[in-house]
Amino acid sequence: MPVADLIIRDATVLTMNASFDVLPHHDVTVNGQAIAAVTPTRPAQDSDGGARKVLDGRGLILMPGLVNAHTHLGMSFFKGTAAAADLFDWLDWTGRHQKKMGPEDAYWSVMLAAAEMIRAGITTFADMFFNQEATAAAIADTGLRACLGEGIMEPFGEAGREAVDAQIDGAIRFIEKCQGMAGGRISAWLAPHSLYACSERTIARVMEAANALGAPVQIHLSETIKEVEDSLAQHGRRPPERMEELGILEHRVLAAHCVHLSPSDIDILDRPTFGVAHNPGSNLKLQSGLAPLMQLVERQMAVGLGTDGNGSEDTLDILKAVYLASVMHPWTRELRPAHTVLAMATREGARAVGLEDEIGTVEVGKKADLILLDLGHHPRTTPLNNPFYNLAFTARGDDVVTTIVDGKVLMEDRVITSLDEAEVLRQAQTCSDQILGGDSL
Image 1 (cartoon, rainbow, N blue to C red):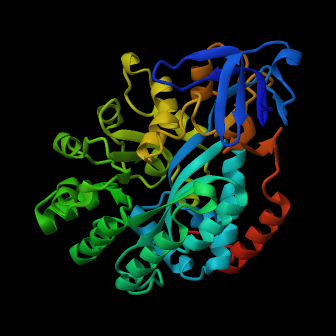
Image 2: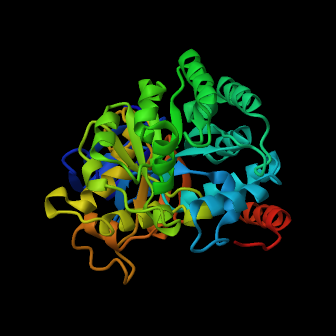
């Protein structure tokens, strides 16, 4: 009998499958990068079988790693710098500081974000920003799984960006260099910022690259009323209509925010290759509005959950986003908000980023991207009456005790093993002091 690489013993397994099956007192066996077995717990001498590593799951929740479907990790230095900010004023302010950031700053910003995500149980994330080769290097070092897009946007003046053709060329080089890095944990995307920040000529060039490279697309969409009104005034079309006309929807697309969608917009976007990244915290802080979430879920399109960047939402805690998404919308009981939103943070998030065959549920053959949470030893989470309700309404990221990606333990018993956390904090503070100098909006 082959020796298992890892066995997690006697946990309560939330499979996060379509039936939301809960398996008390179960073992999960991992061989290599994949889940090899999910079985009822047996006596240790019968089940461990000389496993190379055994983790004790007694009293813990085991579930798929969380998926953060929209981030800007290069903005990790911008947490706690703004309040009551309009999106476009905030973009202008952050742009003036972003142009001071070089690849080394980006690397330490991403390392800081990686430490935060590992602690919060986020095993996969989608990111669109600049200096993405540095991001890929940091993620290769930390062990996380990532969908990365090099940002493309116009105008480029205040943000210190190079001419847009050079940006596109750089994005193509990024894909050619970084696609499949880190043993396949990194996938490379194209990332035009938005329709309002990219001309039709630019979008045409991006679509040419998407066709040539077979690359998926990340973009911001219908985030504010202003964006929709400007699109109608300038083009006579709402943003989703323009996306269809410009050929963007012929590709796999992950669209962030999607706050101001009409019923006809939703009909246009409702296809299996379209993913929404819902960002409740950022939408609230930047006063963008309330997305029509109940009209988006349980369709062909996938709806994932995101935090947005640290500048606009301040933390990368997806369980915080789960809470907000579960309580701020006018849900009906039939839609089961706790279950639905936790699915957004796991299997539906995986579907939104095109990784549903690899991650998002605890089942044999899937990647061993797993987390363990302790909900039984804190007044905030006790009593544990319903694990889905407790996760949605009482849990926080720091209830995660162990984080595993590709079968590799990145954090065990709240100790991060895949990076030097003290050094990351020191370097991040130094870089932030140089870039921001204590400035805030």
